[in-house]
Image (tube, rainbow, N blue to C red; front, side, top):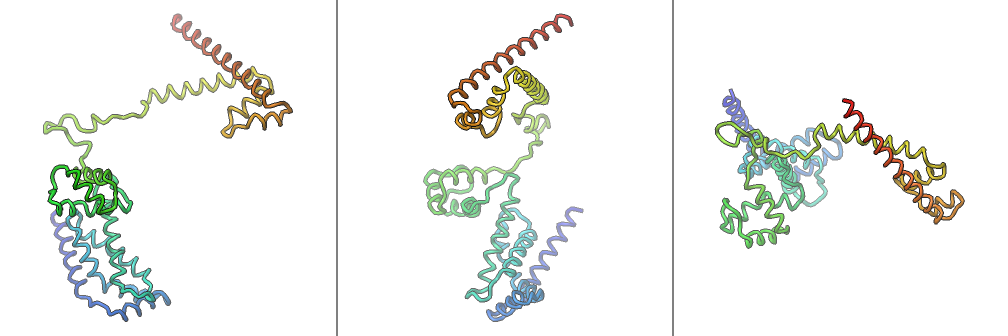
Length: 298
């Protein structure tokens, strides 16, 4: 069934290519007339005629990216998206042929599709990343570096200079392109024993640690609330404004509000912090003592 579907897809692709090549190209005047009809009157038929005339350009550009292990039909489809974007944005008043303008959009659409689908690991979307991805193999082969094994430092430096990127970026892209994607569920050996995912460390807190942290956080909040009740009204105001707000109030501002000097505010704040520390320490000892009693009783 799968082979039958593949054959049908290949047949459809060949038929599309033949139909695209049969459509005659347009003259410069025809391009401008159709583009103006779409721009000025919203003539959809004119837009479609412009797109159909240059479908062969999509086929031609897509065929140049067949070495990236992508189905030809998918490349053509993405290229057609770029062609339609070019047709809808083309300005006939500029002194440029539509084919020249459309080539950029078609190539960009195909390259973006390859970058998105080449690997489950994001390859990169900057201009430097794209230039490296689509030119590294070609430049490497031109320098006689081959496709297997690491490149020499001189070759990486030459490619970095030619493409205007760093040597580190060349080395990183070389590593990405030299290793294929592997499933984490794949076995380490033919016996089907351990898989790669069994050795993947999980640095996240365990469920038990999450529960303990939530409980401890709730306990600390309870202790702090109780300690705050042991402060005077002015001490609570100063601690709240200075320690419990995201945008802490300055000593001078708080002193002006309370009618005292900023040095006096600092002294009251330090005294309040000592009271809080003493209260929380006492509550910790009381909690520890209760746990000891419960452990003995149990």
